[in-house]
Length: 129
Length: 363
Image (tube, rainbow over all chains, first blue to last red; front, top):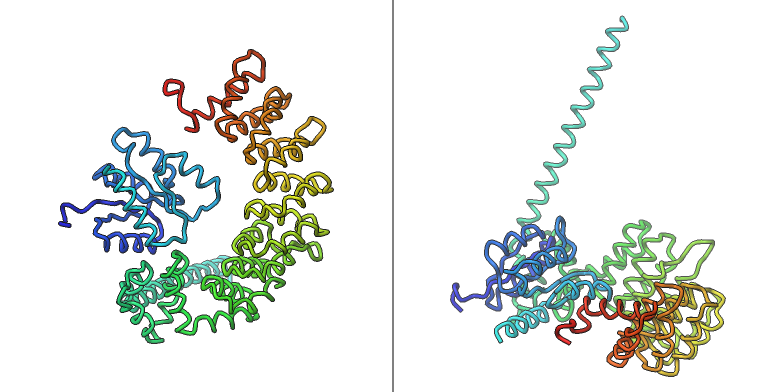
């Protein structure tokens, strides 16, 4: 895959380890990954150069992942953007809130990087269809 | 010396102390920053190997070998990075990271810390042992369940839950017991730990459902429901009907909704009448929805006209949860002009808003 053809994915997490993990895994799979460390930066990055998929942490300083997702769904240009919530919040009510807000998928930390990659691939393949 | 001179000397003394303190703080911060920079420089060359291992991208084992071969003078800076990474991932990468910690003697050190006189060290040791999820650590962790420190007991309970060895369930339940007026471990921590132990703890939970302490019965009922142990349904019916603790009765109702079947509609429905406490009535209405049995529909439809408006709304929500037959029954109930019909219409609107039903135009 050439540099121009690479599918862009945005990762937003305030934990450097998580940003590095996701970036490393997805880059190895050939994706072009941009990582930011809070919700405000995530919104700005999406607005400046919309990715094909965003992976958001829920608990971030400033804007939470849920807040970001809500804003994305309210905007015509980003309402269909695929969003995966990657979070330590594992209660059923948290998962319900995530999907009710419009998340395309919900992954609980600690997570399997391999599973994350599979889910990214599936979402992007569905979007292609 | 005059009073003015004494005041001047005192002021100079205070100012000097303040300046010395500021200098000390600045120096300490500079030293810490320099130390962190030195540590970052030492572990920097191993970051790629760590990420490769943690993401499962280390097919040729090169990253693992690099991590194993880290010299001890660097490892003391690197171990926290490996522990931090291990807390984020699961599956095969987590096993390799745990093996790295073991290879560098961290588990032995953690076991020694778990026996330390310092509560902070005992807690840290227990955390590490739980993170690595090695059943060999169980004998080290079990005594910590009765530790004097609340924090240590909590971390040890979580660690045992992470390890998931069913044989430790009884000890975790014992740790819940109130001793000398103090709670052993918080209920939700014990619940999480027990849920991590899988279906093998069924017999221990059945015993706990009959415990003298209501807190233990309550936790057992919650775990039976969340962990879906249908064999405990007869005990749950007993608790719902006869337990002296209202909290246990409510937990039993929730759990019965989760593990019960058509035959439990009567047992749960019996507590939805006006003669029962409002919290129990409401929870039983929710439990009927969770149960998902169409046999609960006549009871729920009747409750749409209940004097407790919130309970009536919950009856409508439960009818939606029962599925197609529940929604059909709710639509019939919505055609009237009484309060029950208004509640039914509101429940249908709410379900549409939540995306559970197609909107009117789509229907």
